[in-house]
Amino acid sequence: SDEPLAALDFSGLHPRMAYHLNNTNYDGDIYKIKNYNSEYRKIFKNVCLVGMNAPSERSAICAIQKKILKEIGYKPE
Image 1 (tube, rainbow, N blue to C red):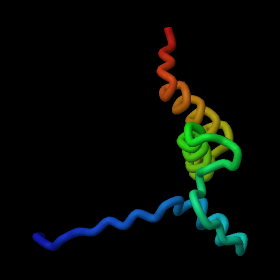
Image 2: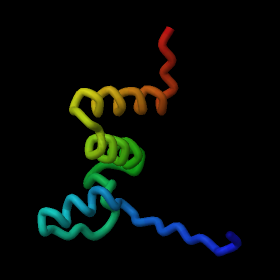
Image 3: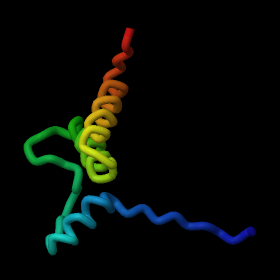
Image 4: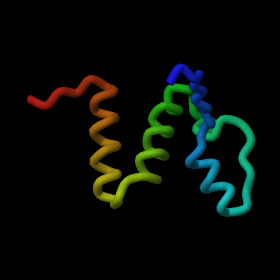
């Protein structure tokens, strides 16, 4: 079909849904941690999303560790 397609981007959808389920609103950048610089935002976003969507605590920890090691350029020997 030649119909135009629009993809909406909802910033921080999963954490905002969790806040909503607890009858709480959150204004601002949901992934920004107070008193930490923006370098940590990317890490916290990954931890938050993986933690919310992983099937188990163990799989979440493994996925987060793998992502962080990849980000810092660690390559196992």
